[in-house]
Length: 399
Image (cartoon, rainbow, N blue to C red; front, side, top):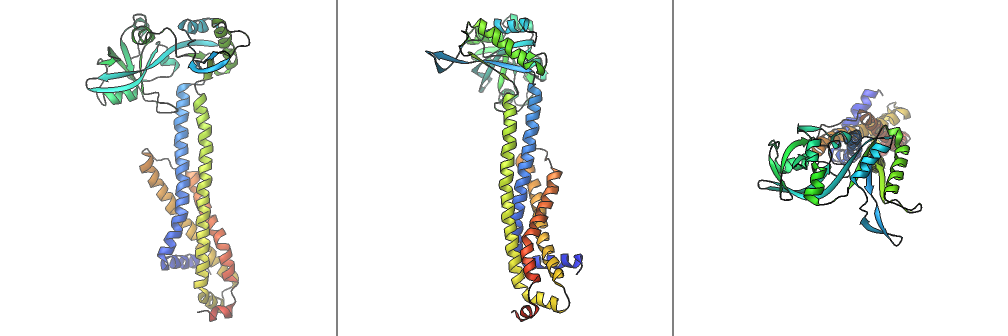
C-alpha cells in the first residue's frame, strides 16, 4: 500500500472519531506549546540579561559597607565606613583603577503638582553617567560646577518620570524632593528591571544629597572602574589594602566592606534562569510522554475496532508489513498534527502573553515536529505490530 493511501486512510479514521482525536491532539499540543513558551521566555530573559550586563559593564566594581561587629559577633546593622575621601584616594593611588564614583542613596518622596511617588534618591558625581553606562533621553547630567555649589538639580529615572509626568517633558520643571524644590535637568533612558529596578531613582549631586537632604558624611557605595576587566585581582588587592588601612582594621579582623563586580548578580540570575528553563522543559516533555501514551491508547482501541477491516485487507493480499506501515503512519500523523496545533497555539499564546515581538525559535520548532513524529511512531509500534499479527480467519470472524 502506498504512502499516500496510508495518509488518506489515517485522516479518514481521525475524521471518523473527531472528539477522541481532538482530545489526544490536545495532549500533545499542550506539551509542545509549553516547551515553546518556556524556550521563548528563556531566550527573551536571556536577551534582557545580556543587555543589562552590557550596560553594567564587567570592568566596574561596587564597594559597599559591610556589617558592624560587636564583641566578635556580627550585627544586622551596616557599618558606616565608606567616605568620599577614600574614593578619591583609590583613584589616585591604584594603578589598576581608572576612576571612582562615590554614591549615597536614601529613600524619599518626590512630587510634581498633585502627583506623588516614593523612590530612591541617589546622590553622586558627574562621572556616574559614563561609569554606569547611563543614556539620556532628554536634557543632561549635572556638571562639576553644580556639584561644588550643592545645586538643587535632578535627573529622573524612567519609572519616576512615568509616575509624575507620563508623556509630558520634565525638563525645566520644578519637583519637590523631601519637600525641597529641585529643577529637573535630565531624563534617563529605561534600563529595565533585573534584581532591582534601576529606573526607579532620581539622581542629584552628592554634595546636595549629603549636606542639604540627608545630613550625612558617609557613602552607600563606591563604584570603581578598572583599567580593564583583567585587572580584577590587582584592583581588589588595592581596595582591601587602602580601606583596611583607612579603617585601621587589625590583621585578623574581618573586612567592614564588601566588593563585587556590578554584573555579579545578573550573571548568577543568568545561570539560575538557564537551570530553571531546563527543569521546566523536562516537565513539559513529561506532558508529551503522557500525550504519547494517549496516542498508544487510541491506536490500541483503533486496532480492536478495525479488526474486521484488518482481516479483509489481509484476505485480499495485504502483507503484514502493509498493515504495520498503515498503523504507524496513522499514529505518526496524530503526533504531527498535535505538534502543528502546539506550535500554532504556542506562537499565539506567546504573542499575547509576553506582549512583545514574538521570538520564534526555529530550531525548537523543528525539534517539536521531530519529537512529535517520534512520539507518534513509538506510541504506534505496539498497536501496529498487534494489528499486523492478527490471524486472518479470526479477524474475519470478528464482529
